[in-house]
Length: 78
View: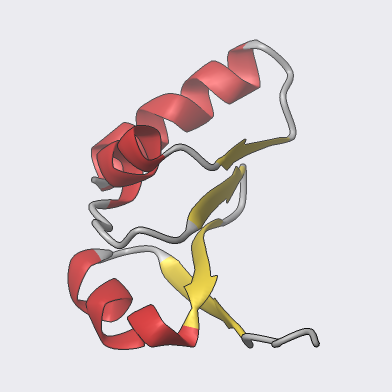
């Protein structure tokens, strides 16, 4: 997966993009390998992270080698 991210970073540099935020399932899976139903991939020239909630902590750590995982806290609104 890291080759795909590095390829995207080259495209970002060529097009003067500071960051890419990926929220579609297909593109998230393509770039990170993460198959969970909830999550985002955030890529900058210096970092690449998977953002999801703590329900997917084990799955994210197993499926996303080379990406930093950030886990959001679930908040239930009444």
